[in-house]
Image (cartoon, rainbow, N blue to C red):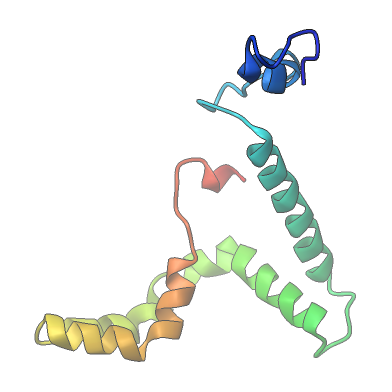
Length: 130
């Protein structure tokens, strides 16, 4: 808040003036706000938890170890690149054999868990560097 202003004269500057004075919009962003800051903090904390779990120190079979192993396998780009599309070939063959859109709709309905995993992977500019 910028209490040097009165809310009745310029509420936006009264409410956000200090933020605007003290916060630089990153060069790679069109805008930047408190929800961006919170999102970045949540992402950093989540990454820290996942990396700690992936360190291999948790007991075998524990939830922490399972999460860590899953994360480590997700981050293992060398193995992922080496395998290529091989793990997806059975599903791709099934899709190629479908006769029409109705068959595709049925296939999607039966494969919701497969599609949920695939749709959770976001590909966007800049993700490769993170």
